[in-house]
Image (cartoon, helix red, strand yellow):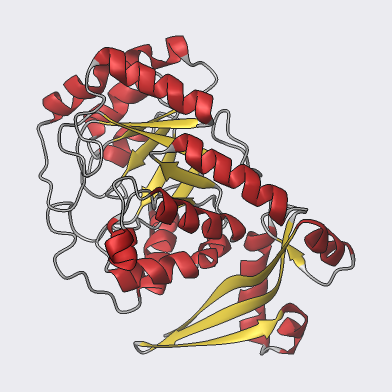
Length: 353
């Protein structure tokens, strides 16, 4: 069976984008006037082989009738404005998701914010620094980590979840968990978003339990489990395999469409896989949903920078985020909120001039 995929590329920003859109020489990305594209990369997958062609948007009309129909359907999704279904979040602007790990063993900040006073102080600092979403987790999903008992996980996050909305009514609250019972407790405590790194595949009861709640969800890709995911991960084609994973998940499991897509950088991926996903991230716009990416402090930064690695990996984190921002990604999951916010503000001022 032959399958086609459409990636928007050759982006323009600011005044250049607005002029090209107005003169109908380029398409707006996600309905935004400040970012446009005039080329697409068409991937063709057939019998295990993949080839791609880069064409100018004006040449779409020259394509075979059947291919043209598919590409036009994809472009319709790429250019459509994203609905603002997540409370307090505008998908037309970049948003920062601040990480609150209430774990003793997370890969970069395990144990730092476990005390109640420290956890809320850190939340306040992240919000003041520009975080619009706070992602609260009580189980480490670093490579090699093992599953913990749900009661222990809930004990770690209960205080923050139950008191969060009393303090921060206008900030989006996300719960990072793979367990359905904790998802429900999180919703009852005021959570606006469920962020499950397993893509709702770990706990088979999750989606049936969530049906009665109109809760937004992050579909996150991970190959294997946190304990096994970095043991020689393999794909036929990492970019298209993950696209297919998202497409199947959306069509078969998620009917409410309040969905955000996260390709899962570092979750069952080699350096090459991660770089492919980052460099070709704009493919996922053709699915029609907002995109979230977490590159903060990830191992691929160390693999690239070598002796120039640093504890917080702020430079590598920011470099990857600014590239992703130029490709239209909407949400960035980060540890160092203030530095990332500063980088985004300066980068956008230059880019959108």
